[in-house]
Image (cartoon, rainbow, N blue to C red; front, side):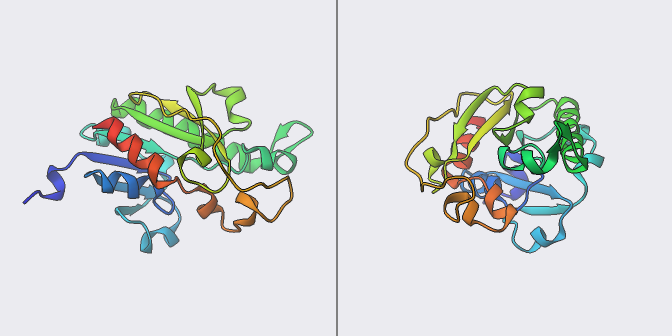
Amino acid sequence: MTLAYDLPLCIDLFCGLGGWAEGFLAEGYRVVGFDIDPRFAVVYPGEFVLQDVRTLDGRRFRDARCIVASPPCQGWSVAGIPRHWKGGFPDATTWDGAASVIATQRIVKAAAVPWLMENPRGMLRKFLPPRETTFLCAWGATWMKPTDLWGTYPGSFARPCGPHESARRGAKTGIQGIRDPALRAKIPLPLARAVARGFL
């Protein structure tokens, strides 16, 4: 019998509903997720820790196989630009997101393990050029959602746009029809499994 602590460990930062965790668990990992929102504790499929990711010391994760991170994107996404970049200047939500990205970089540097961070294609790429871009519709999502990837992960997960539900700006179809931001942010299972296999 394999004990959970004998499995490769994935640390899931800003874990939300657990899109990454579902894929990593399916590939035989132990997954520990960190998030500040207590509502995720009852639905997260891995081991959930209620903690502000920005307070974490990455040195505690040096035994992990990898780290994945999905910092808040509201202030950086294309859809959020009119709301969060008044006159070309970022608001408090955007600065909060920037603090989360900076914390992620600090954590992965201290942990010194392979890592991957994702965020929807948007303003963040102007300050932190991504390694590559993938389209979530190529991984089974019904919406297009181009997503930038950063990190020291092995291989490549860039995929061109695939079949998806058409949704012009302001439509009630596609990702705009999903009211819950956490559900809009969830990583498709095929992408999560592919990334998990890449880290093995």
